[in-house]
Length: 114
Image (cartoon, rainbow, N blue to C red; front, side, top):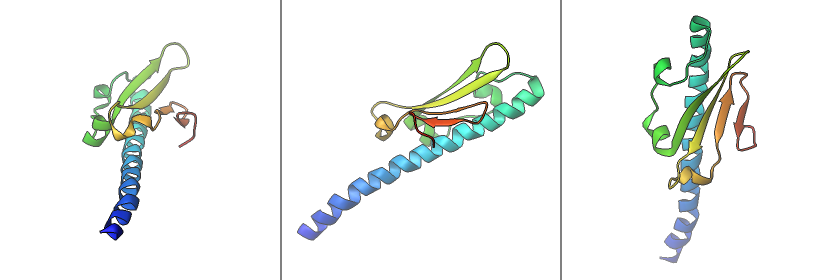
C-alpha cells in the first residue's frame, strides 16, 4: 500500500504538469494558426481581421475550455494585430501566463519567450 501511495504521489503531479504543457501547446498552435490566417487575410483585404469568424476559424474545445482568445487590431499605419490567449480562472492553466503573438511574429508568454 505504501509503495502505491509513493508512486501516486509522484505520478499525479507529473500528470498534471503534462496536462498543463499539452493545453499550452494546443493554445500556442491555435494562435499561431490564427496569425498565419491573419497574414493571408491581409494579403487579400489589405487589413487585418478583428474576429476569428472573419478568418473562418473556430477554437478547438481544449483551447476554449482553458483559454480566452482575443484578437486586437491596431489602428493607424502600419496595420498591426496582437493575438492573446489568457488562461481561464478556475482551470489548470490559471497560473500559466498569457500567451501572445503579434504581426511581426514576436511570441511572448508572460514575459518569457515560448
